[in-house]
Length: 306
Image 1 (cartoon, helix red, strand yellow):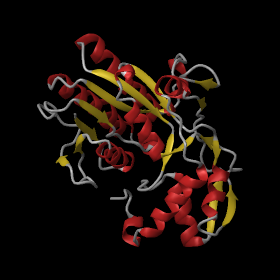
Image 2 (cartoon, rainbow, N blue to C red):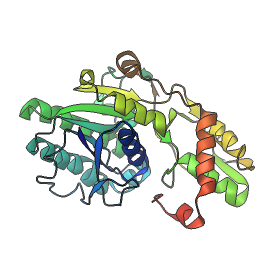
Image 3 (tube, helix red, strand yellow):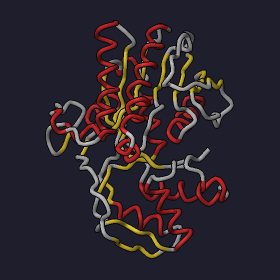
Image 4 (tube, rainbow, N blue to C red):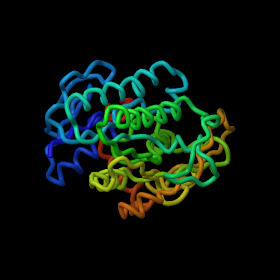
């Protein structure tokens, strides 16, 4: 099977590419940056017409996106052009190339518009409650997948609503990387507020396992939440990082209001795919710390790891 990963040179994409290679698939990467692995590199921008680029692929994992929610708020047009128009271009090329299925990286940020304090894949939307530009762009990506399949009879889709991933090759700004950087440079980890804010963090390897399991036919035209099994507080992460980079934890005034993300359950992923994340926070942070200690100062200074 020939598989394309858009955004396959990035944090999550590079891990997914390796997981697919380990499973024996033929993998190509569409990205503006060179892939980590020695695979076919299609150097294209998803904001441009992709033409006949996808004719040889059976499945496409569409991960290329503006993944930084704060940057999406600061530049809504950039977010729209990459996440919405980029997805439209991917779906058009997939339809033209007769690709069997597109597997889309969405986000648990869409939960802000779902009804209920604890939501799962079947929880309905109240669109009046959309509270971020980033979340709106992810809902837009999903709607494009639904409408293409309904109106044009293809391609099939599978949608993943990611939790908050962490792991080796994280991009600058993700909290685990930020805390390691602070601890190493200043011996102080600064937390805004009381540190009780939580997100459903999960290790990137577990996230990739769930995506590969969803290549099964039963996952066609389905949505799966792929999040951590429990809420993890920012304070917990800081303490785990401090186990590997000794530092004092300092609580500072909250500088901004973070949008509320609800408790998100992986009901369908657990029941249909048998997927549950298995990497503990402790083990995941160990892997992150080993990676951080292994790279040089120039790499640490880059916004993206590559």
